[in-house]
Length: 195
Image 1 (cartoon, rainbow, N blue to C red):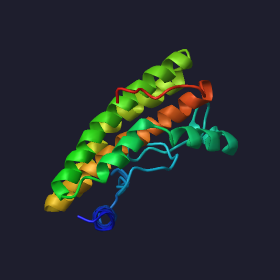
Image 2: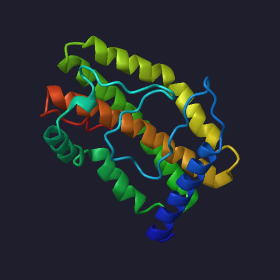
Image 3: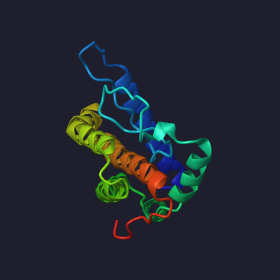
Image 4: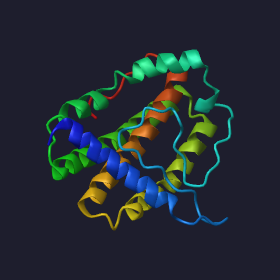
């Protein structure tokens, strides 16, 4: 499949997922819909459990200056997982290959979340607010991943591809948030080369 067509297909899948999520009726007790991305997100928005409000406070990424964010973004652009994914995605032509690639990198980004969190806890001397934030994310992880699955359950092969991509983006976004927190403590941190 031509790369332009591949990315167009991914974009269409994401658009369908967003449309499906937007069509669900929300009540006061139901969680907010999860946004499904067609590509790994480059935003610095934190990932939290569905329905959680993001409140600025000590240690949160939202308090970082724009200059520090720019410096972090330059470092983030060097992360080895995105480079490896970009290289491998050029060879993935079928829906099956793209889905397998996204599943492979979802596992690797999940490992990166663990690596970033461990480094962050060490650098922050086990900061209680950061630990609480991670515990909250962990407790909402199963529900968020289930929501990704359910949003695409009736979309066949394209749905499977969208689920794999959204799962990868879910873990990538959390890893980025943790690495951005880590950057505040240790701007010279290294990405785990085993991911």
